[in-house]
Image (cartoon, rainbow, N blue to C red):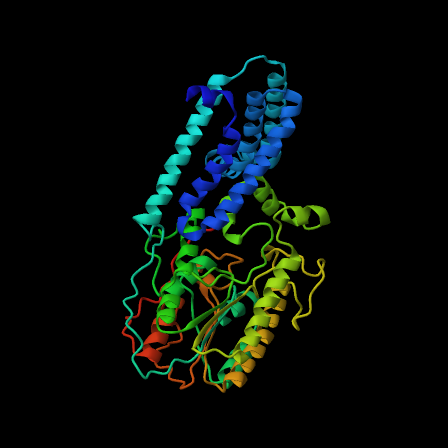
Length: 497
């Protein structure tokens, strides 16, 4: 065995396999094997190509493999290196891109020259690298098998719903959840921007909605807020005031995917229509995808190219060739996603279905940047450039707010007309305006919008300060005679990203 492992650079193939399957093991319930295999195939192909190119000047299998694996290791684990240095390095310059890339280039040149001139065969090095990666790969495969066979709910920190079936004979109206991202409540708009947004509340009241006067979200970040709201519970494992980690975000995404609300409704005969920015189990999001399925970003976001694409997105968007080759989400992609969510939601009330529907539409407005004017017309790149809230430039946000208000009027009117006022419509936001941050008023960032229309207009369960975590508890109690106890309407203090 030692002879086999010491004579060939199998580690060129084993490294990308380990990288992908290690990521799969850590995010098992948020990825499919098809997604993982396509990503592994792409990375293995890239590694082999790098190896074959380097093999030409070095003219030695092992030495070419060592240099190729050095390059690919930096590519695969750049995110881990950057995040570790950012968390623990004593000086900021140590994790600057210019420093890291320059150091890598210098080491790569020195290593290449050494491998070009040396006559060593590096058999023992090849043996240990091959053996180590095989051991790591087998360990991760064992973890994957364990989660797939013995622990099917691993990583799904989901509370038991305890919800019974909807009683026989109870009406099951269509339910529309229209979620407007970072839509600030009237309190924060008046205090921070001196802006009166009462026209939107008055419109909703004129259409029969209950509109809370001082609602708050429980969390100020989208994925936390939606995970809590759609599971009708607080996130028990989150430590208050803690800065959200990548693992926290992934776990919240898993909570959304397997939420209690969608499981309860699906078990009671509802069709789940997902026009959101999240994947829901068996109902994936309508998201533009390019070379890779969106879920594999949980793995690929650790790579050098992905980090460069995110951190230098402002420059790459201006490069026509690079933005097509790299995983850069272009303005066109983002605008198309918003327009697609609007189009699908507008068409949904007229679509015939043999069963009741739960329609979750998530609109990335008034969240910045602004891509549209108040009428919905696309803005140019120069018109939509983001201005810092720290400089008090609220005009872009207010433009987006007016666009959102017009969209609310359009959607609500369409749904009510098409359904004859027989559908439940929830119009709300995940959280309020996060910038500027006011240490003396942290919960004002959570001041959001919360309005609901019920065909029978029985709004006794709601109050002017109802928070997101209780929204579906109250709704299911009111519509379906469930017995959910209401949770405290409290804001969870969160560290800043």
